[in-house]
Image 1 (cartoon, rainbow, N blue to C red):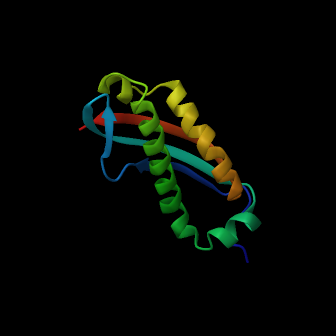
Image 2 (tube, one colour):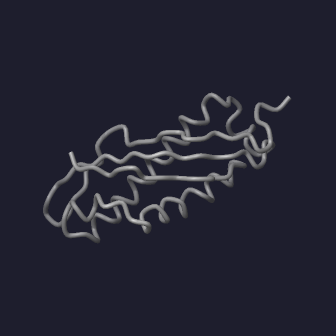
Image 3 (spheres, rainbow, N blue to C red):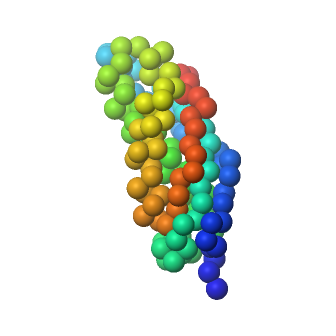
Amino acid sequence: MNAYQLAQEWNDLRWGTVMPVALMIGSTFVQVRARGSFSLAVTDPSRLEPQMPDPENLPAYLKSLLAQTITDILGERSAEVSNVAQLTEVTPQTIQALRTILEPKFNALGLQLKNVTIEAIESI
């Protein structure tokens, strides 16, 4: 018996950075948090089950993956901007970068990333 079913969906899963992300913008140290939501569907249960046998662990693993990915993206963006307002602006390019990095990782697990949003990137 498979723990996952083809086309099984998880909708409106919330993600966020657990700890503030410490970044440098020029010579200024800033801390930011990011949060959003995502949805996914199972496309290949036979690929997913060996890597994640317990469905209860899947959302937490994927939330962690999203938080790490946005942390990496913000780190790259911090070198390209001149102030924190530019860094915390949620742009289509930021969302596309998140999707571009995550889709192959989800696909490798036998999942389809249906939707991903960034609700806020906030300076603290």
